[in-house]
Image (cartoon, rainbow, N blue to C red):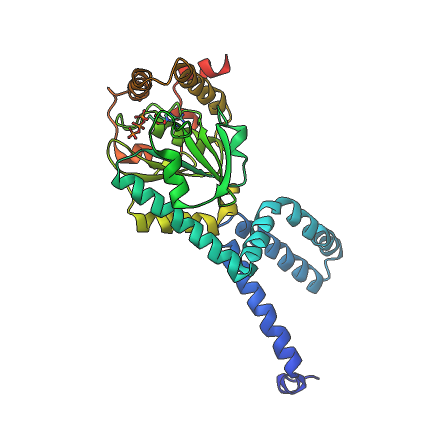
Length: 334
Ligand SMILES: Nc1ncnc2c1ncn2[C@@H]1O[C@H](COP(=O)(O)OP(=O)(O)OP(=O)(O)O)[C@@H](O)[C@H]1O
């Protein structure tokens, strides 16, 4: 009979290394899966494993065979059910393994964006930056604007947004793809939520709208209030300091996939929001004169149901179907 002492004496340094690596892998997997829907499923699988072991020990042939049969296929079932989580884990690992140079480049691009926001804020200029995630933002916008394809530099961003009539890119959003300036003058679909701060005009409604339809992180600068906020999945933040903005963007870049695994917003909102943005486009096409933009601003603010009471919590959560007024939903279907 093998005693625990025999067992310990038979262990080699390779067994120790083997066990150590296994422990690290299990720990890393549990940390990555923490808080995801994988945990209850893994617990169920562990229960099945326990049942199989108990059934074998008690010589319950039929139950043991059935549970074993299920467990043999469990790896395929888990891959199918958790393909999104697996993808996220692999991407997360890939990002960590990126050469230091790539990470430094990403960090410097984020600083450039933050510096541009600070400069625009100081000059009291409004701006809308869309940082594209996994979903192609161009599939949801109402106007793709102009192609720029430039490195992400604060000077370039500021230059694109100087509000002169000869600068054709200052109106609309700047789209950032893979930390490069991809396009400018992009027009976002307006959100149709009616419980928004009435002070939010069309720029903010566009920021919320595009974030409802994609997994992008949107940075919005208010010309009127000089505030910087981020919008993600329809949830708009409180005003942020440049440090908080940098931290928020870096966090989003580090975990882009976690966001993608969240359920998509209600699909009907796309049609409604596109309809609203079309009316913005119609107004814009009518001419670039100040009076037209004044009309757009007024419409955006009036559309925000100014007579309704609101509080911060109303717009710090992601929207649901209930946030869309029945009339607007009908309008979007048409
Ligand atoms: N749907 C949109 N997509 C992109 N940019 C937009 C959109 N709607 C408006 N804008 C930009 O926002 C500007 C108008 O801002 P408006 O005053 O209506 O918004 P706001 O949310 O009140 O922002 P601010 O606080 O900066 O005034 C326009 O000149 C245009 O550049």
